[in-house]
Length: 458
Image (cartoon, rainbow, N blue to C red; front, side, top):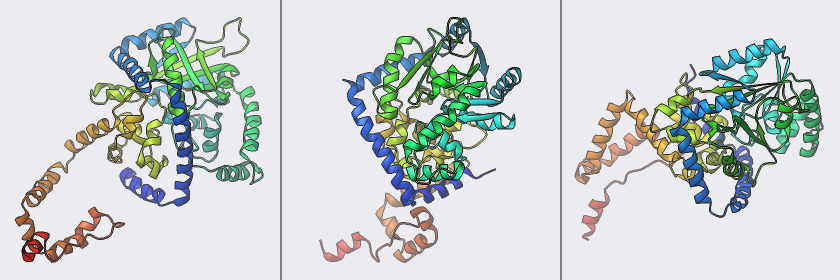
């Protein structure tokens, strides 16, 4: 098995000292920060709005099971097929049956992090089904054979020159192509795929329990074509995406837009309430909603971690995090990155030990400050650290070390008994690994400040 922590540290060092990568990341997050600063002015009292949103999501978690059952009942009443999936294998079985029954050969996909979590493209490829990401950023990273770099902005790590070079390599476009030219090319390319696809796949920004509806938000119109043209629509939604009532979207849609992209509201907001009716000209003939657990109940069962399920996937904590801004998204080796990803990944993928990510934080608290639903992320990171340390085999060794360290540091005379020569020798042989090879070496003076003070006669 891969040594994830070792890979993480190696990649972190590589990215942190890649000046061009840092320049691109700094520019793109800087543009986001400017947009969000303007967008926040949309709300007269942001703290009050965040408090309202947090309370609604807390209510959802208190009434989790009844609201899920209510959503299922109403969605079925709208003509949807509702399936429950505990793990990824359950989702694959459901989709495999749909592929066989509908003779699916081509799939178009609206941007969805849950489909990345499930690696749906890989699954479809194994079943000889072509799948096309239809969000421009997602299309770019699919073309590059990469995973999304960011929850909201999949290609944040690429400059316009990188994208132009990629399209020159894949489609022989002019290597100096402008973003507008590349966008026009992708639009024409995907139009044909929308028209020929037998199935569309989306996620869900919100699941409305009151009406059994799926709420989707996007900026390019690709999502509307994903669920308007193909005969069959599959919606894969995490069970935590619930909101109680339709009126709650009046709060959550603009809150998500402001924190996700800095917009007052995204360009396209859609409420799907079942397959197309006989009187409607567009829309899928069949709509399947898959309610996916994938470790979310493990989070729910840990009382310390329950607040993490309030997340609306806006990406604000990533853009605020000084660690993310230095090491980027791919370094984490997880679907969900940044502070929220560090908290939830050890619960959502138990096949890998991702607990080390909780230590990849400065605990500055900026992630908590910017969260639109008031998730205390830095406290959750600390809680996870505590659980990991308590269950570690090395906890006894660490306690022994720190207890002895404390004894010496709390009694100056004990510390002064050790000759400076031996202190410096310890630093050059053992301490350098802790101190770090990129720091100037720590050199102990020949005599302590206390002795110098006494000699001077102060």
